Amino acid sequence: MKIPLNVMRGTGAGSDWKTQFVRIVRSTGERQIWSYAPAQSNGDDVTFAGGLKGVAALASARAKPRVGIYALGEAGSSASDLTTSRVGADLSIPITQTASLFATLHPDFSNVEVDQATIAPTAFARVYTEVRPFFTQADNYFDNFDCDACPNLANLYSPNIPTPREGYALGGHQGQIQFASFDAVGDGRSDAAESIGYTTPDNHWRYFMERVSADCDLPGTTNCQFETPLVHDDTFANGVSYSDGKHIDTYFDYGSDSGNQVLIANQAQRYDTGFYLYNATEGVAASTRKVGLYYDPADGLIQHPDIAGYAAYGVKLWTFGANSPLISTGISSFVDRYHNMFGPLDQSDTSLNFDALTKARIDISASVGSSYLLQNFSCSGTSCVFAPISQNGVGSIYHSGTVNNPGNFPNHGTSSTPTSITFNTGRFGPGRLDSWARQTTMIAGPRGTLSLEADDTRQYLDNGVANVQWLERLGYTYAASADSSFAIGVRRIIGTPPLIFTASPVSCTTVVTLPQIGTTGPCTGAWNLSFEFHRRFAHDEFYAAYGDASLLSTTPSFILKFIHYFGAEKGT
Image (cartoon, rainbow, N blue to C red; front, top):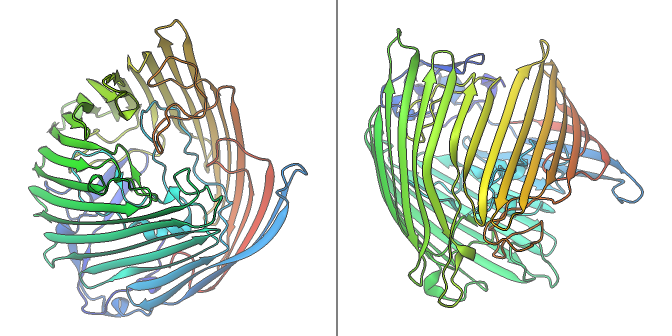
């Protein structure tokens, strides 16, 4: 990636910029940071950035509008009904030097994206990374709440929003204020969000507020998160936080949900407060929260609604001198206890983790602990079943550069060619579950990279049945030049996923019935073959693609896509 100086812009208020330089050695993952302090969390921490003088002309560079027009042709089998052609547009119009209006009309995201399929065992909804450009441009402006030792609590989780027919957004900042708004309009539904945040000039205090709404109006529309055809949901949240950038972070968040899915108004709020005390080598965090049963935004992802309790986390890091075979070691612990609105314990997690990084760039980790979850997240009459979902084990990464500590400690990064193997075991629902994950990335020629993965889960149920599932993946990428690349991927998932709460026969597409929660996977097998060729020109892009790596399986179709940019270049 390169950023031309003539597309960089600022407020023009002065010629002194906060600046940082970071050099990443890809072969080892080492990060060399120019302006560095022991309490620094990463290379992007503005508190420890250096200064760059004499950039007045750069700061006053004028922003340019950009319009991208695409034309696409798709050819599929006669049975798939995919043969079609279409056109659309993406545009970005600066309204100030630091804010822009951007929109998409009849968007298409058919080019192959990152394969995110996984069979890693979980009792909660899986979280996927957004890859659609319209939403990724706005993502950084939302859910910017502090949260220490917490589960996933996202008011906006854009993968829940289907690809819209058209979308409009505004985002940027003015001085110490950042703001954003978008509206994604589809067939029979509209998804909108607004946010605003203020940071004090010393970067210590911060206030953030956001609203997210979803409306499905047409009878028969089922692409809202819930199964009912008519959904009206409105979520409002705000938070205030303080950080001195060196030793303490603290915060308080509040949110409320309303709409036709909220049946009990006083069970549709979220309260969350906590703190994190740390220095260069150790830290401790504690938080307490309450999330109501009906605080469950239609366009969000609440990992576990209806909880009230606390969580705590601690970490200690040791570093060693030049003569030691070790670079660093770390130990961390985590505990949480949550009850539901009726009183029974709903979730319990306790873990102790150890990690060591050697001079040979081998990262060794181990974990021990226990996790329990209320069966089906509720009690049946007076019967409450607390199901184990524990997974503990050991792992190793070769060509690593990071000690696995989630605290505010500097990490060394990971190389471009890591090899890892992990084994976990434990009581998981109605049986013991063993899971393996094996991955490697290697250089294949001067411009190629080959990635291999083979994962499996084996659950031995108490009734004598064994559920076995495999994920096998191969990918190859070739960078023909700085402007063109080729990629091909093959993935197969076969077998039966592990059960969570019952040993009775269940569907292979869902294990529990509550929205957002559960594991999915095929019983017989699913294949995905995808490839992509990409070529970039001065103001054009060309894609030739087959398949879609974001899907579990591929309906065969071949896609040609051409994009022309008027005005500024892509990414500006």
